[in-house]
Structure formats: structure tokens, C-alpha cells
Amino acid sequence: MCASRRADDSAGRERCLVIHPGNPPYLIRVAEVIPAPFTSDETIKKCERLLEQAGLVPIRVNREVEGFVFNRLQGAMLREAYCLVRDGVASVEDIDRIVRDGLGFRWSVMWPFETVDLNTRGGIKAHAERMGPSYERMGAERGQHDPWTEELVEQVEAERRALLPLDQWEERTAWRDRSLMALLAARQSISE
Image (cartoon, rainbow, N blue to C red; front, side, top):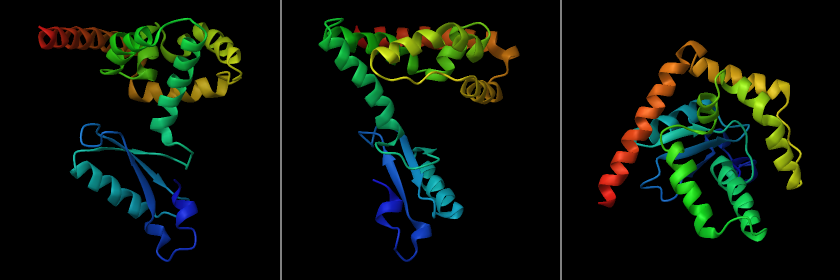
């Protein structure tokens, strides 16, 4: 759903935008805020403040895209998961376990870009140099040719370095390990 399609001719359209919460919205705190090109900055800021007051984490989406960011990321993983089942690579149960005990476990304390930034000494740029060609081949295997261009890697690197300068990499890596150990201990205490 796009505000620009629904409210294009509406009076007061500068107050129109779309909010896309995660599901179930009473437990998943993220809510995408998707303004139309005509939505006012004041409306966006008010909406973000309201969401924060409701205990949600507003994520501003810079432009309208089909499926929202949340669903597109989930869809990318699901497309690959379905193909892996179809191709006899792994069972549904084992793919779910890989996500639950691997990716999901790790992503519960840090996220995709932070994960690869901390998994490779030298950060994003070093990771892209080492792994980019492999991911490009894996995508091509599925009919997607989306290489990580030098410009794209530079953009991601710049955004990550603004969040975590390389001189703090070791400290953040130690934080990651402590956080995962604490999460593992909490999981074990729940299952006992």
C-alpha cells in the first residue's frame, strides 16, 4: 500500500503516510513509516514521536516500495529457504533450526550489517572483498545478478563507520560475544 496511490488527489495529502508494523504488532516493536513524496516533514516527525510514545521503534523508509522493507527482507530469506527445500539441500525443520539457532540467535543481539562488520577483521569493506564474489555467484544461481558494486560497498562502509569507528571494533566484538553468551544462558534457563 502506498500513500501516493491512495491520497494523491486528497485534500490534506501532506498529512498522509503509511505505517507498517511488524506482526504481531503488540510484541514486535518495529513500525515502518513510509511517507509519500508529498508528505510533510512535520507529519513524519509527529508520527515518529507518536510511535515512540507508544513504545514502538519507528523506521523511516525513504521511498515507497512494494512489500515494505520488513516483508522484502523476510521474503528474500523465504525465497531461498523454499529453493533449498525444493532442491533437496535441507529439510524445512533443519532450515528453521539454522535460523532459530544460528541467524536468528545472532540477529537478536546484532543485525545483518553489524554481523558481517564484526565477523571480518577490517569490517564491511574487508567482508565485501572476501565474500562479495561468493554472494554474487549464489544470487546468479537463482537468476539474480545484484553484485555489490564498489560505490555500494563504500556507502555501507561509510554508514557503518559512522556507527562504529574501526578503532572500536575489538571492543564491540567482545560485546557481541558477551551478549550471545548471556542470551545462550537465558535460553538454557528457560528450557530447563
